[in-house]
Length: 171
Image (cartoon, rainbow, N blue to C red):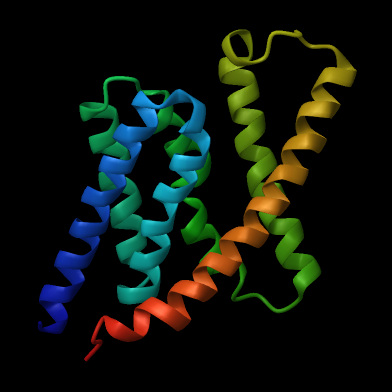
């Protein structure tokens, strides 16, 4: 497979797999967030295999197709608002030296996303209103869960790079 063909086909394949996983997430509500997180791995694989732009393509195509094709759009919205773009952000942030600065930037991106969800969907998602303790709990708890997700995501990316990527025949 030539380089140009590879740069087109891998992101297309990863986008298709992502949409299939998002579909399963939409019909399996108890595992919805976990499956959406798994779907984000394919944007990371695109970044690893063919570059950052391919990851952006996977995110954009999967987001658009998810909103068009998936019957329950909640999974697609979770992907769009939290998980889908994160492999791209992670790739960019981890190029910066300094672990503390990386974590600050990652948490900033997550909390901005959470704030957007908070202001757009608070009546639907959060049923305790605007109480200060409730808001603090959501943001602190969300940040803690995000930190665990990032740690696990890093380990899965390492596994992909060291166990799977070497068999994709880069040329």
